[in-house]
Length: 159
Length: 195
Image 1 (cartoon, rainbow over the protein chains, first blue to last red):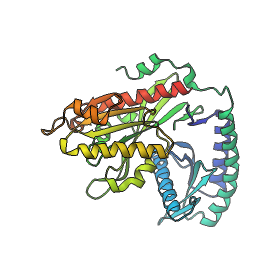
Image 2: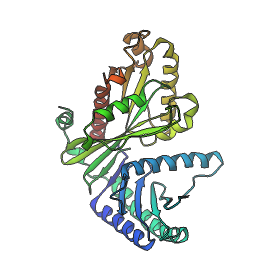
Image 3: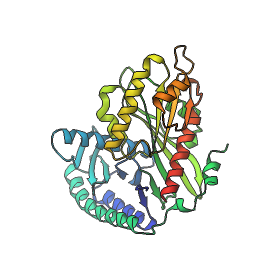
Image 4: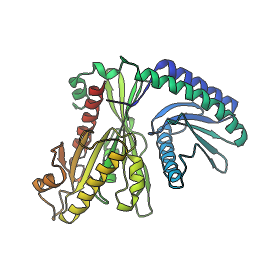
């Protein structure tokens, strides 16, 4: 049985709304939300010039590595991480045990403000993901794959 | 673990290339990267040591086309092959949808191949996956080298379950796309089954 993440239009809009608000409230440059397995879920702010796919994959790699380190010293995980650069800094926090909320900010914001806003946004996002998990677990939840035929899959590889 | 996004109409899947050190996992990805249309690929990331040995992982995002209006994207990862990077290998297997085992066909690497398959089985098990159930293909790489084992022998040792297998010479691309297509197809077929 496939237990992968499924994102529906309604929840996606809620998530995008929370990320947009966080970008404004935290004076952030970019906010993005990544599945712990490295899939980008949503991004907001000045993300156009960023390679968000790579960012998502490296974020997941970093969180996984730090999680491994946490376990080695007897912690469950490190729910919040902060990386300070010369101009840009990066804050990562684990939301609902499943996704990572990443905020990139510069001197226009501060770590204190980011942490404060991330806490609130994280709580809201956790609720959305709880709802999503319930929706997915509900019997009869539709999957696009239900209608896909073997021919559709073959056609993808047919050149 | 796949990610199906109805909002952007995308299906994302994760494929991991596994195998002993220096078997050619990174070379497989490099060939795919070099030969893929720029529209269909993202940047390839290699977290490697100064001597070009994979330290954490290589990553290559690929788009394969559309199925019923859903864009299918595959994220290809390699693990570091060297024995002492086991903690990192475990992390990369998280959320995997399909595995390619790249075997080094040289006779002197047979023990390393066997050790790596066993390690794959154990590490998948720790993440709750069963190597006998997950979409899985085997590639016998380095077929151009003089001192290689026969395919029969390799099959007997590494692929007793007879999953799809391909002979390859990764630097020149022989077998590279066949391997990738085979695992991608198995992953999609598995998703369809789970639907």
